[in-house]
Image (cartoon, rainbow, N blue to C red):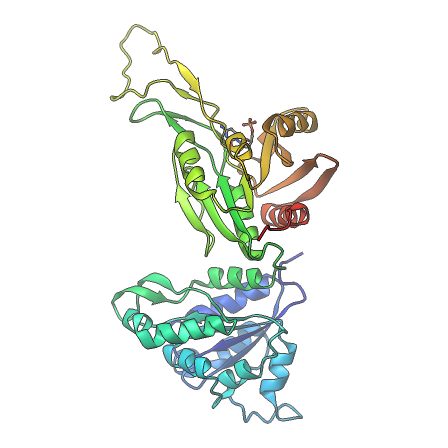
Length: 403
Ligand code: C5P
């Protein structure tokens, strides 16, 4: 089932070159199953035409509060009562200032003011020159919007249309769509702090070689995204993987198991939940050669000695005041029995088992959740869907926060 099936999104454009990205954003929302209604200011029409957005959304675009089409002549009321979420993209500095003051002299700001507070989120995607973004007036206005419950998404940093480089680029269409989907998820982990490990570790043998495990990081990154969407403050300690960091997630990149343990120990204090999704190498070479080990012509491979790596999950679980700990068990056979034994050995309340070889690098999988009193099979699905279900199951089990 697409993530926005049955959802209706009201997209408001204000003046900005980034308006061209909204054409793709509207398509992404449609791909995710949403119906989309577009409204735009007069300035937005200088950058992209209503005709383009009408064609992509399949609905006539609203450009004025004086639009005579609605019988009651109240477009701002009708549009906001239908919407599950409102997304303003691009949001100009001027529009943000208007919103902060609660002004309503044209349709888009009028709709934002008329939106019922409890009906759904209002997301604002700033797009402006870096100096305009950094200006104290803009920062003051953004802080006011946050205090008013508006979700500010972005801006990104990078090349700007004016030729300068810095903060103020609007998010890309896919990131806007991800943020919209995220804003509509149940906030099951609101106020919770979550620490996660993901990806493999890399244990150096010499400057060019090393030992590692199969792990794309997809499952761990999907859990980070799902936990963020559930309202958690998320820190993700990642081994070497090629995965994009979910927006708003704090990421710490590491190489070896010992680096991963150090990063986890540096961030674990105050966390409610620790999820160890990383495929940590069990052993590392006892010595790391300073120079590349060369073949010497004898046909004899170099003798390597190994030492065991620290068990990060067991270390965290053994702390006094440990967070709720969730482990993973990727097994090649007897999945349930091995996972059950591993849960007891590591002294953790919940373990998530899967069939290792068939899940490595895949977009889909299935999971078995094992705790002290139950076993629950999550049916096959894509990893983000599994991650959302896992987060919901963890949220049910999480002890209430103490003061
Ligand atoms: O012992 P095994 O590697 O099978 O256990 C898997 C679980 O333990 C995973 O959650 C993994 O992230 C975690 N683990 C760890 N540190 C290790 C080995 C595994 O945190 N050194």
